[in-house]
Image (cartoon, rainbow, N blue to C red):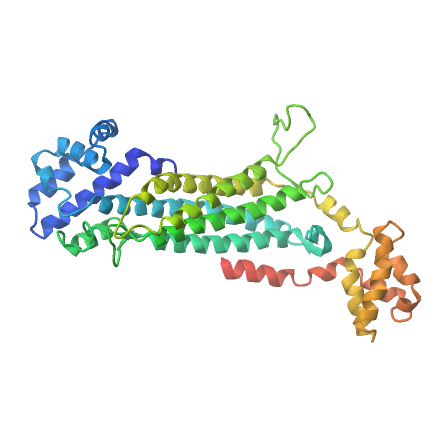
Length: 424
């Protein structure tokens, strides 16, 4: 990803755009075929020389064309015929974003593979579900990972759409009218560079395309943060249901030798903030003056490489976290039992209503027996059995059956089929 944004890669794309455009002009009879051939045969550039020329002329495309002419010779006068700088800059930027999207899709695929593997590994590993960070009802750890898999499947779809959004080419001249260049040149360059012609450009490709692209990166980053935050919470000492892999020789603290900290997911949380922060400038770039200004240019020179490199790194880092995640089923079981059976309260509530008790009364019976358990005053099942109004409706055997953990997992296969069959 870093190499994609290096000056050498950028200027190589510029050269290909110019060379393909010259080919198209030659096919139209606008420039000699020999000139188009000379561009390919002798066309080369030197990054340091381009920088040297730009220091004088204060224009990057002119500096590139000047250096190209130094190598091509007299035939270089036929290069860039009827084109404007944005034809090169915008088409190149879109090519870089398309190629960046391909790399981001590959990173997403690695993460999806890791999530799928670990989800199936822990498909029926019981754990506690939490709402408001408080114990709610049982689920499996595989379902947690399946939910993340589904989310990143949607992320993949969004990245594909973002790639499609920016895969356009503009070789339309100074204000997009094709006054000095045939639209066939644009079509030729688009085909050769794996793009499609922009239906209508001004002097630039419309920036709503790029706003959507970077907004998509921000949403993907937020999904990375969501999963990273879940792991961080589950690694807390008093929870410790999962843990980032702690390698031999790794150190957790300069002061406390016992520390094993969730540094990777904390890092990912911070990186997500950076990528999200780059979405807003991309949206602000949409409102350019008239047919073009260059207020967007400085922004894109920063957020293009920074957002894609950061997200690419984050996707691979998160994939590594999931691949190596240490999972503690015994701690999950201990946490499930921590509230003395309160996690089965809804089943008791529903059973009472099924026996003819009003929902209001049933809620009261269940809640008044649940509250002492929070204070450590007995277990939920024993208190329910001792409650005269409850026992008048539900026998001890009835109540015990309501505390069956496996009851909550009856539809795990159904959910897995929805997630992995529908998205694979």
